[in-house]
Length: 94
Image (cartoon, rainbow, N blue to C red; front, top):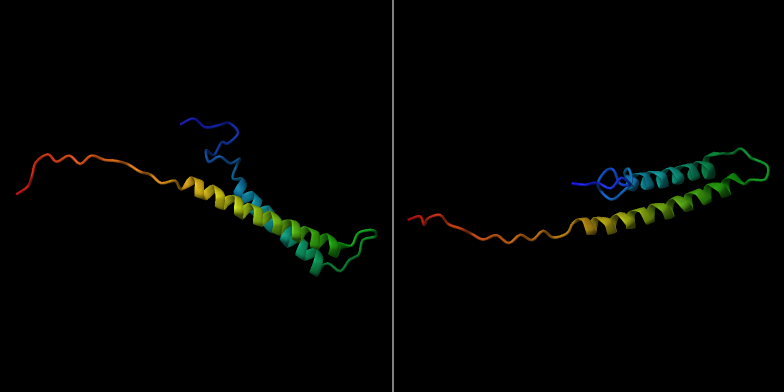
């Protein structure tokens, strides 16, 4: 079986991109929640709570897109396998 050089794992994805996109989305959500709810420090010119909300929103959108994309791919991978076989009997049993 020949594999495309761009997709070395043979599944049509580059190095497990599904897991990375979900993982990256979860990390964005976690970092955003930490900035929003746990950090009390202030930086001049930047509102850390707003940055946290932006990161959480981007993470949630990325997670939703990743799950929809995985759902579409899993439907395409699970195609029906139809095999027609001819039944051949060597001899009849009595």
